[in-house]
Image (cartoon, rainbow, N blue to C red; front, side):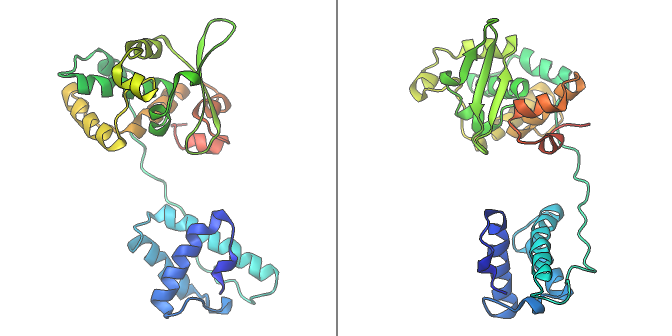
Length: 261
């Protein structure tokens, strides 16, 4: 099977993992399409979840790409049998994603932090909880991304770092107050950014300290803020299509992963 023929970006990881597995299992770079059997698929699945530490659903997604290719081969009569005929691919429901309640956010906002380092991180985290910005986007947020409409309301208009899809986010009074707090901050001015955001690793480490200070029995990470925003938006009745635009998602199916519906 010439896996190098799979040139689409969608199949990049599949090509790489297939070549690694085939070389390890079959001691060659390629195998014939007809050699792809139930046993080969089962072994490849195990390889994904062990060698590459893919979760079950991640392995299913990769195998689903391979299944689509094999169906393409079947339609073109390059193979006589579908090796996936009896091989079932079923995703399992992921555990609910951690997010904060309204009371926990208020506690975070009101709690006196023991030092400036944690105070800065708390402000950035709260800002993300109230805007839905991902860590990569808040880290690159500049003054040029802030706009004011005809009614005098301030917005964030920024393409997402991950997908380049435009996010359109209205700014609440609490987020405006946070921005004003760092308007003349030396770090922000030097970096031409609106918030003094540290690295993701440091941010997550400091968030654990903040959770302990506030007595919040949850594992706080930068991504928890984005999920918190999505869940609260749904709770307050925001339509899914509007939430998708704020989060910078290209379709509402992606948005449903971020919020409890």
